[in-house]
Length: 623
Image 1: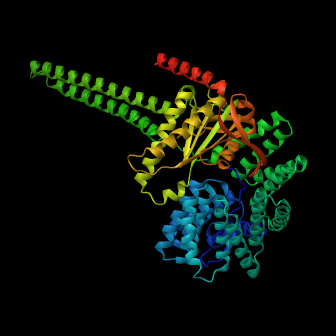
Image 2: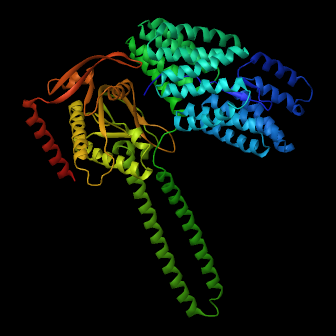
Image 3: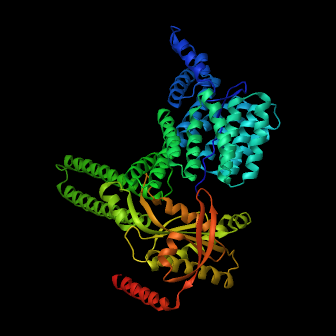
């Protein structure tokens, strides 16, 4: 689900347990850099390098001097220098959106801290790891590491670090829609920052509170807080946070239909993100400008910025897929190399036989015959293995992607994104799933989810619907792609009704006495962009406002109900009886009209049944 992006307060911890933000004093960092390069022997003054890293804000500059410090630390085996270098590398990669490299650096820093028994640094690194998981969106691991760090900080006298972690835990609470507790964390952090006179901490506290207010619809309080936060951050040159806060200002003015003002803030956010190489902010700013142009009817400009946002987003996105595809490719290459080695060995054996030919010609002929037979049989077996592995790879690829998409990927090595103007998207999830999951073993949980999702797969295949993905207990599918489909909205509703009928039947007939759930369904229709992203692990996915609205329809639905948007209602109103629910507030969208689907109109039922029977007959004949 979409929501305002909350800022995590990233802090670099030094050995004296002094916490300073990466952008606390860029002017001081610049001054140290000038002094460092004018000292005559810059490569020897690594204490000054450590101080430069303490104040420097630019990620690429931090990485350069962290690597320089690490090379010297490795030479001198100075664990303290190693610790500083790894921590700063982790912070810099986190700023750049390279979370894999960031976590790798932090875990290496943890090893060094434990080796020198530095408990304070270990605590700070725990929290940096939690920050990185929070940036990725992995709230489970973020909370785990935050809780470990906060437990240690509560027993210390480090108010700065405690305030900073409270800010970041507030972000995780916000992502879970727990606005009340998020604000409580921000308020406690603000009290700490005010007491120790830490202006940047107050700026993050004010800005994050402003984003919560924006999500709650209190625009006046949001603008007041964010404006005050930006003023403080501009004085301290912390452009990372300003870029995100400016994007939120654009959101607020867009909601007020003031697109000129909104575009001004979004463009300024893009300029800052571009100047400082902030990938995630570049993706967000381009997407926001695309949405603003689209709202003004400027489709060409909107699409250009949308494509750019996809490029930046995909550069930091870690897609889920099946790892066996890469393993099969590796196995294929290994089998080829092994075949060459074995054939070479056979040739060497043949050469030895030739040397002995003058002694025993009959034995030579026999041995040659045997060797040739064995070699030919080996080659045949190798070719069969290669062909079998290739077929397995092809079959696996077709299970992951639509057939045409898989073919395009095999032929060209990549898949072009495609826009579909008439698509319906369905989200379905189980009520109370999290509560049940806490009391089930992993085996029971997977068995219960597989019970439902396997049946859902059979249902959508019957209607010619494309499965997109599953996220925990959420099932996502779409109709109208990768090929256009008539009555795509009607087919999706029929499938949704089959979902609900199966869930109801499963509750009554439960011979295994396993966990049974209640289902909510949401559907919306419109335009989406579909494609495959990444280079190693492939996944077919869709993007666009239609996807976001469908997710909101599911969130606003009720148990055993199909909740549809106004766009879907206009497509199906002549075929289905629907109940108007009124205008309901949707996060980030405002008031939206919603409808519950009751069932087919009586005169349409026979028509749809005949249509589906014909479809099933044609599918059987094709098979």
